[in-house]
Length: 434
Image 1 (cartoon, one colour):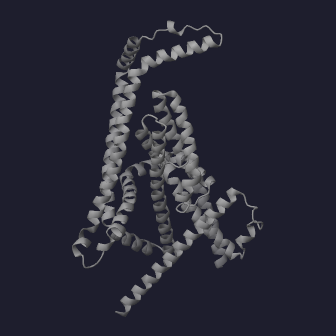
Image 2 (cartoon, helix red, strand yellow):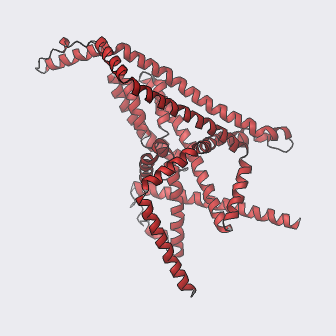
């Protein structure tokens, strides 16, 4: 009787799931629009979570490493103001870095735009002369000097077009300003949320754990918390590793551009460093912007700049990135490319940035599930490894190393979870004895 009831229940669940999936496919646009409204409403909170996660990295460094000598019960005043002081120092550090970066970018960008506008007529004349000489050298007769560009008529034409579309321009400008102010408002709310989260992160952590244990069984709650701890570790490792990589690539780019005497070295180095936050495609985006800016100043140096960045990218991909990010992310190259492509298609630039650690967590969970299934079936994973010493290709060796890294991280998370579980049991027994 029980088996029949369970069988009918499973059939009923499958039918309901099939109907729900079909309904979602039929009304996919409406579902996405509803999700978009919900995400927009909660965007300040999500922004706050992101800011809090980034600020937490220097905050932990200040509390546990820089001022660890004062983390003693006898320093009562310091224990009261420790969180506030370290939080202020973290905010000042992030703001100082952003101010330093934009102080290099904005003035140099304005100077490049001004030089381009001032030198545009002279460059057009030089281009006409170069094309005329090139044509005459190859037996063609082209008189480009007879072509005169009337810049006054071009400016008059542009002014007339602006006056004709004044209404549309006004509406578009107003919509852009509304979006800018809305984004600033959400950012300010996000900063407020992040400060509140970091100021009471231990209290919020205990509250979330109590809520999880209240709605889940103990075993499932412990598994869920171990996954959360592993995700936090992976994301923290990715952010810290990416920051180190950005600093290294920016410094190397600046040194190389200074050696080869390329223009706008500080600004372009900062641009390359900022776009390096985007895995895989960030280097191409930064190179395109840098080459365009240098091309406006010196076309030949723009070509040398592209060659220099290609060489630098090879050094970064083969020497720097694996050493810095290999231990913190541990994803094979194919998975990184797939994650960045799908994340960028669905969520734009932010999707490209967070896709790699997200897929890394999913990869760890999949690897744990796969190992569990193989162990239950008593299948040794070493039987799939080639027995010859040099039979594995470099990509297979890299994948094997990444797998070992992921297994190590999973074991560390399990050991940490077991220690936490033992500590909780010891404290509960102590309370019961008291």
